[in-house]
Amino acid sequence: MKRFLPLLIPALFAVWFFKDLAPATDRGFAYSRLGKVPILFKGRHQPLDSFARNSLVQIYERYAFYDATEKRSIPAIEWLAEAMFKTEASRDRRVFRIDHPDLISMLQLPMKDDARGFDGKHYSFNQILGGTNINTLQEQSSRAAARAEAQRDTFDQAVLRLGNALMLYNALLNTARPAGMTQLVPELNAFQQAVPRGTNAYDAARAKSSDEKADLQQDPVVRSVARFLYQRGDRSDKVPLILPPEGGAAWARFADRMLEFVGGNTLPQAAIYWARMGDAYAAGDTGLFNAALIEYERYCVTQLPKDVTKAERETFFNRMAPFYHALVIYIAAFLAALFFWFRFSETARQISTNLTVLALVIHMVGLVFRMWLEGRPPVTNLYSSAIFIGWGSVVLGLVLERFWRNAIGLAVGSMLGFVTLIIAHNLALEGDTMEMLRAVLDTNFWLATHVVIVTLGYASTYVAGFLAIVYVVRGFFTGGLDSATARALTRMVYGIVCFATLFSFVGTVLGGIWADQSWGRFWGWDPKENGALIIVLWNALILHARWGGLVKERGLMNLAIAGNVVTSWSWFGVNMLGIGLHSYGFMNGAFQVLAAFVGSQVLLIGLGSLPFKHWKSFKGTPAAAQS
Image (cartoon, rainbow, N blue to C red; front, side, top):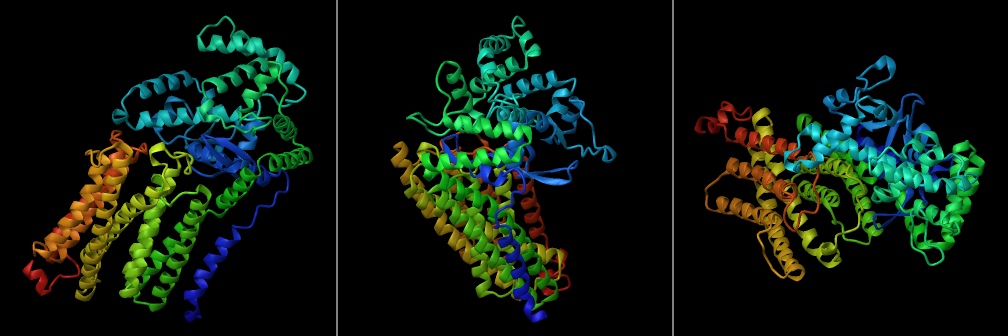
C-alpha cells in the first residue's frame, strides 16, 4: 500500500478538482442558467454569475454564504436573484460582515449569541437599518470619508466598508426592477402614473426638504420610483447594464429603459423578458421563471452570440475555481514536505512532489484560462500579479528539487504558492479581478515583456528570501540543519539571487523604455520606478557582498531575507503612498499586513544574527564556539 501512496493521494485530489467541474443540477429555479446571462458592467462584458460573485464578496467576503435557518450554503447567483426579484426576503439575509466591535455597538446590533443564532459578525440589511443609530452611521461615514486616507483608523475603515456595502446592496435591489414591486408587468401603468410624484419625492429627498417626502411613506409605488431614480442618478456606477443592444441602441440599465418607456417609448423586448422572470420569481413559480429565462437565452444568442459564448466560458471558469483548488493542494504538499524533513520518508517526498506538480498544473490552467478570457498576458493588475508570482515561485521550487532532492524546493515553492494565492483572494475582495485596463496599460506587448519579466524578478527574489528563512528556522529551532543542508541552501540562494538580478534588471530597463514611449521620459523617480530599482540594487548588493567576502553563509541568508522586505515594498508599499503614475491599486487595510510581514522578517534577521551557540543545530559544535 505504501508504494501506491505517492500516486493515490494526488489522484484523490485530482478527483476532487474534476468533480467540481460538473455543472450544477437545477432542481427548482434555473440559477446555473441565469448565471450565464451576459451583462455589461464597468466596461466589461461578463456573465451575471461573475457580477453576483464580485458583489457578494465585497459584502460578505465569500462567494457563497451559509444560511443557518435553511442550513445550507447559498451561492452568489441565488442571492443576487433574490435581491433583484424578491427584495423583502433578501433584506433578512445576514450577509453584511461587520468585524469592528465599536461599530457593532454604535449600531446597537446583537452580539454573539449561539442560542439565538447570532454569530456576532454577520447582519441583515433590516437589522442594520432598523438600529436606532443609523443616522449616526451616515454621520460617521461622512466624517471618515472627509479624512485623508492615511489618517483613517480601523473604525473609519470599517464604517466606510459598511457604507460601501450598503450602497452596493441598494443598487442591486434596483438592478432588474424598482425595489418593492413584485409584479412589474401588471404594475407598469401604475409605475408610469407615479413617476411625477416619485420625481418630486426624489428631488425633495436630495434637497432635504419634507414637502414632497410624505409620498414616500404613503405610496409604495411612488417609493419605488424614487428609489429607482436614486439608483439611476446617484449610484449608477454600481448598477450593471443588463439590457443588451436593440434597434441600434447601446447596452442600458433597466432604469434607463423604464423611464424612457414612461416618456412614451416602447419597452425593449429584453426588458419584458426580465420583467416576466422577475414576476415569476417573486411569485415562486419555477416553471414560468425557467420558461422566460430560456426565451431570454434564445434572444441573447440571436442578438449577441459572442457575448453569450464568453459568458458561458467565464461561468465555467468560476465553477472550476482553479486557484482555490491549487491553494488547498499546496497546503497538503507543504505538509508532506515537512513530514519528510522530520521522518526522512522518501514516500513523503514523492507525495509532496506529485502534489506540487498537480497544484502547479491546476494553477497554470487557471492562469492560461484567464489569459484566454481577457485576451491579455498573465499580469494585468495586482490580483493577477499575485497569481503569477505564485506560479513562478512554484516552478523555481520544482527546479531546485530537481537538483537537490531534499524537499526544500518543494516546501518553499508550495508555501509561496499558498501565500500568494491567499494574497490574491484578499485582493479579490475589492471586486472584479478582470476589470478594464487603464489606457496607459492597454498594450499587450509591454504587458507580455516588461511586466512579466519584472514579476519573475519579484518571484525569484521571494524564493531566495524564503530559502533563507528555511535556513534560519531549521538552524535556530531544530537540529535538522546539518552542514550538507546548509551548503545546499547557500548554493540555492546564490543561484536564485543571480536569476533574480538578471530578471529584475532587464524588467526595469524595459519599463523605462515603455515609460519613454508613454510619458516621454525614460526615468522620473516615480515611487514604483524607485521600488523596482531598489530590488535590482539590493540583489546586486547581495552578489557583491558575497563575491567580495563581506558575508558568508549567515550573512547571505540575512541579506536574502531582507530582500523579502524590499520586494514587498516595491510590490505593495509604493501603491499605499497613493502618488505617482504607477499607483494602480490601493488595498485598504494592507498597511497593517505589510507592517506585520516586515516585522516578522526583521525578527528572523535578528535570529539569524545570533551566535551559533544559541542555534539548536550548532550547540556544542566547533562552529558554535567560533561564533
